[in-house]
Image 1 (cartoon, rainbow, N blue to C red):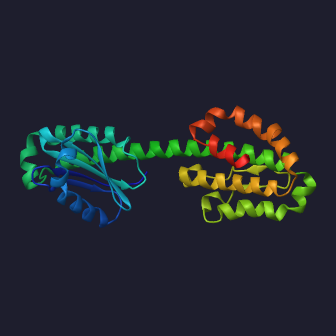
Image 2 (image 1 turned 90 degrees about the vertical axis):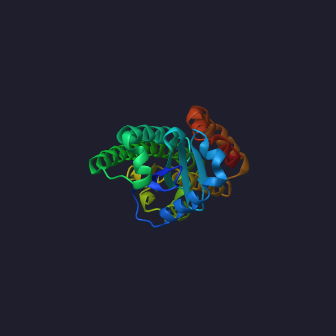
Image 3 (image 1 turned 120 degrees about the horizontal axis):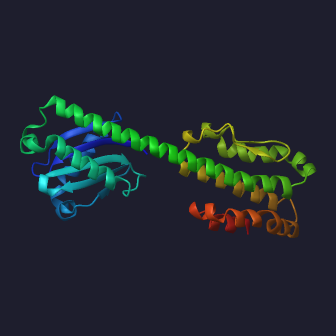
Length: 273
């Protein structure tokens, strides 16, 4: 997850009273200005006490209105982020902002924040929250990445070791290697994904924090698809069908829960069949 900036805006004046940026970009300020200019057209949506989202070409604005206190809280993040996780973050920050500046709200919506100590206190609270969120997201994504690597490696190993004989692997070794190299070439974090002549796939050199989960899934599935296509063109149809039942069927059954969690079952079955 990439968070670019956070703003607290006066609902009445439509001007930022607080801002914090984590990436160097002038885009966010321009985006926020355009967003604020359209607030009058979105009065009904903004007036609700829920997290709303505005989609832009490469940004998403997540916002929550606090009508009683005349505040609008806005996160600007990457366009791929989903709104669900921001509900609790914006609610927490809304409560903290009111707690820190409560007796000054009327003044700061007109004059801005003048109290350096309170400003520093809220800065630290926000940075701690964002740091915790990002660290937690990174750890969770890394765990999911390791899970995906284990899942796909089981399928790769079954195909390479059981669908292909040792002689066939030796004769077509360059083509097998090319499948892995071609799919990982543009992603440095995955270049250590390798296969040895016995048909064993290794991923122990990969740092799961260095690649996005969505991208990893796409690459691993592409390798799987390429291996299936290669195998179908290498052995007879009858042999292929028999081995699918004997070798891949048990994996699909044993890993049913994990495959369902990643919504992979249908994709894999369609490719195999």
